[in-house]
Length: 256
Image (cartoon, rainbow, N blue to C red):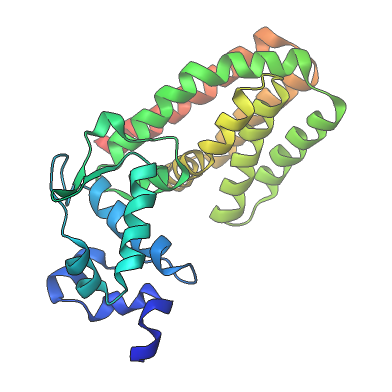
């Protein structure tokens, strides 16, 4: 067992009790040690265990806590610095950067953000983004979509309606919206959609679970699909705004 410490972050389970309670459920199974460690530390930063300005434990402390090598700790810190969560300086150590500097379009950071206790802030942020981007992107898709792109949009919409589980429905929902961004023909929206994929999926999991009328939500998506298929930009824009308003209501109900 001792010879395998650096092969899995599961060794974190042998850390001090306080560290175990903080990290419970946050580890990634089957990934490299440094990536798993970065995931654990990143989660703690985003959920507020280490507020901006906090000096983090040094390499020796992290190494002891998680029973991993110092080189794994260094690689994990480098990963978090690349995501702008941390800065580091010799003789000072690593500290948490101000929140406004974090790269919130990073897949991992978005995932940590979605899992943080302040779910309401996350949902509001994703919805604000959608209100800014999706109506115009959908109108563009109605004007520019190709036959192949239309098949992708229609297939995702149909699979949403046929889904028999939360996971399959939300996956189809995410594919539907990403396909629309792709069909918009705007080269900047395509990579942006890929970046926020995890944020959208987390939002759709929540709203699908909370909604009392899945069929109504399906009809709203079908109206969007129909408007794009018939190449009616104004109707597509209006249909998306109706869907967003419905999602807003689901989020507001959760706050009550």
